[in-house]
Structure formats: structure tokens, C-alpha cells
Image 1 (cartoon, rainbow, N blue to C red):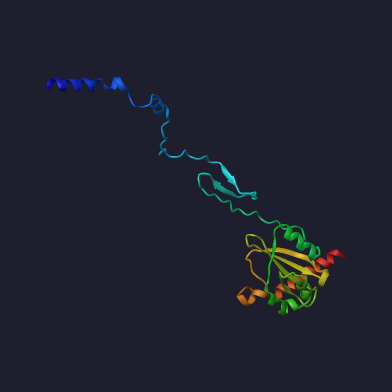
Image 2 (image 1 turned 45 degrees about the horizontal axis):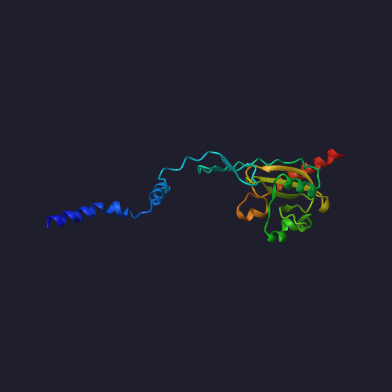
Length: 211
């Protein structure tokens, strides 16, 4: 019995040498040469640069940096007042708009008020000049028209002369942004007779100087 067991053990020991390994000879090489699968990196992304991104079409607004800091330049350039005195109002108005001044837009119902129905008011309003605040029905046909800049500053233009002959004879910034006659019902400071007389005196002096 012991001899049979020894013979079987001897045969089993010789089996690999007689029949060889069942694996292909190229398989270990292929496995060794295969590239390992890359694992996702858990390291943080590198810090971005700090270059500024300029908004398309804008000449002065910095949208922010690549880092995410939003920096908006809200500086508004001061609006210039062009030299419009003694110019026809149609010309002066176009120059003011070109320099960034925005005509006030009064409500359409203002057209039926006595302030607009006096003097040159119907003509100016009919031309689409709805920045018209009021007109005087006597004297030099004075009219007051109002503009704003992007900061909300109020620019007052006073014209003298009837209809298409309306000419700028005074222009000034209203430091307290006090409105004119139309918004008096909203609590604004009224236009007094003294104001109208002062405007008339200035117009008379300007006319005398031209003689």
C-alpha cells in the first residue's frame, strides 16, 4: 500500500513538467505591459490668475477677476453743459442731449394745464418738447424747460421768444433739484412772481446788450 501511495505522489510531482502551464506565454507579458487605470486626483485645483475681465462693449466697467471678486466701477462722468446761450432752443436741445443730458418727460395731462397753454407753450409741446415746465403768457414769452443727468442733477433752461424763435437766454443747475410749476401740486417749491420778474429783467438786459 505504501508503495502505491509513493508512486502516485511521484506521478503528481512530474505532472507540471510533462504537460506544462495551461496559460499562454504572452499573457503574463500582456498583463505586465498594460497601463494601470489612473485614479482621480483629490488634490485641489491650482489657484487661478488675477487677470481682469473687461466687459464687452464697456469702456470703464470692470466685471471682476477670475478669482470671483466682483468689482463694478459705478463712477459716472460729470456731464458738461455746452455753451448754448443765445442759441435757438431746437439747436440747444440737440447739443444738451449730445452731451448726455436727458429731457424730462412730463405727463401728457400737463399739456392741458395753464402753464403749457400760455405763450409759446402749445408750440413747444407740439414739437415734442415734453420737458417743458411752463411758459409765461406775457412779456418776453419766457419758458422753462428741464433736463436731468445720469446722477439726477436738474438743469434748467429758460428761453425767450415766441414759438420757433425761442432762444436760450439762461441756463443753470438747480442745486436743490427744486421742480417747477407742474409739480407744485406734489409739494415742490412754487415759482413766485419775483422769479418771473427776475427772469424778465434778465431777458430785457440781454436784449439791450445786443443793441
